[in-house]
Length: 298
Image 1 (cartoon, rainbow, N blue to C red):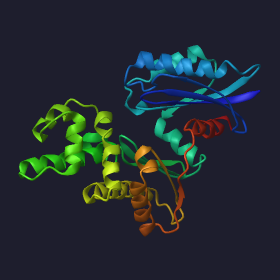
Image 2 (image 1 turned 180 degrees about the horizontal axis):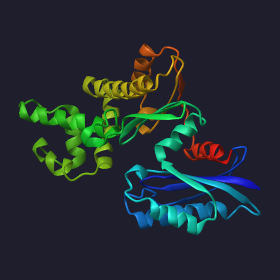
Image 3 (image 1 turned 90 degrees about the vertical axis):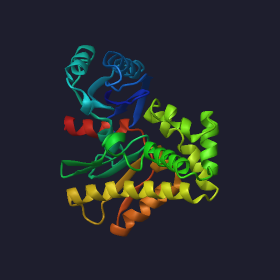
Image 4 (image 1 turned 180 degrees about the vertical axis):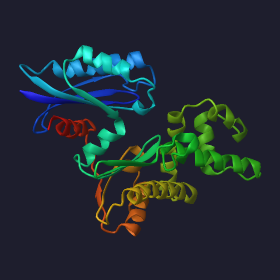
């Protein structure tokens, strides 16, 4: 049996899936994080473990190709470590790309189009006639507008304005302070300047719950998030000279799971691209590895 292995290595887990040459899932393996920027030695060990788990159930099989999409791969100074480890562990041709590229290929089935992602961070990735362009993805200091981190930070900033202007604390401010175990916004710096991006973004569900009660500020922030994400998509459209019937896919907890963000995103896209084709369903990013690997094999 001939097959392809796709690997999705993220900041918390690594997933390896074997597909036959028709794209049918054969087996899978899972392990810890695959982001080389966290700890390269451990990430490599996790990646190899996931692949070995994936291969183990397949009897008399022949792996034609391994494609890996790894978070943070573009920031690795010297990729030789992971390449040498894979060559030693598996006598199989392989290619490594950023995890955003395999997500793009998965949702767009290896075809041209745009993928806009919004989770803790945000980015739009477009591919057209083998040319790749990005918008967003600058990280939380330079941008990431429309991301979970950005949504939460807009709320925290509003809290500081309430304190500075001597206003009564809003209901949302009181909820956040209670969750933090604080009594005053003046204590907020203790959290903001020591928390990770994920810990800050973890306040988004509270903001969404507040928006669902009809509170204007929370609703407006979520709509603004959708606008910023749509702008990233449209900026990539312009860079790549896409026609009106461009295909745009979405991924990530913010854009895929928060209706107010998603509807704002879609509405702003359709104002400029009324013929747009939207891909809203989610699939495993490892399927993108399958499409990428097929191109290498052919």
